[in-house]
Length: 279
Image (cartoon, rainbow, N blue to C red; front, side, top):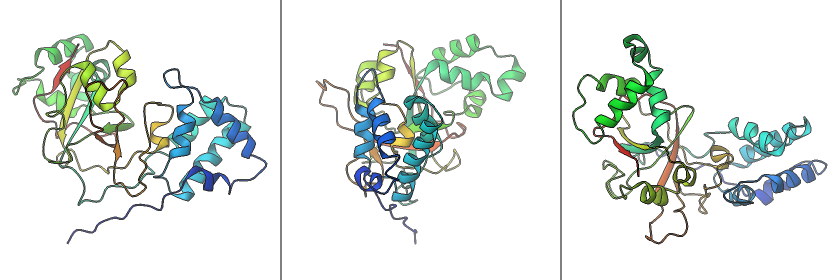
């Protein structure tokens, strides 16, 4: 029988803020208002106020760490980044009963070239980043990747923290099968505002969760999103995962897609073909 892990007790900003030392409340409140996002001014503060996935203890600790960094003279943006990075993966962990078997993520092509080029295997073979990029482009959409597949499977899916999505209706299915295969459409559906504004090609990576080591999967929180203003906290505190916010104007009527965060892991469970979108 599967042991289902219940969500952590959720907390809201107002209740947590009221428990903080009154002498530092103005410091925190004032700094949150100064957190600025070029694309969505004021959105980070709105996200903090809308957070429902953090426990009371973790939410209080996050704000307390933010205050400590501010008291040390750091600018609000820097203080927030430091506080968030020490509070990542604090959202509820998905139980084994809810874990999808197939996950996918969108990654900048340059970032993945970097991941592959820094593997021991690539360095030993003298594979240059330019050579790796040309091979990735050559085999995009191919089920067979002769002599290149071992390098693909040793590279990290992502450094530090990975954002991934999956198909709720069929957790074995490639999550990109039901999403548009254009850069604009995919970024719009997944709320990838910064990737849409960047002209760099994107690579779609899909992997088997078990073959990749079954790393823990978590519902994302404001600490995971940090200063990424396209993130939106889920309103339901008992929801097991987050949901993307399609970019506006959502003329294609894209539905929000599930999202989770996970620690860095290798691509041992990578499923072929991968796909590179340039336009």
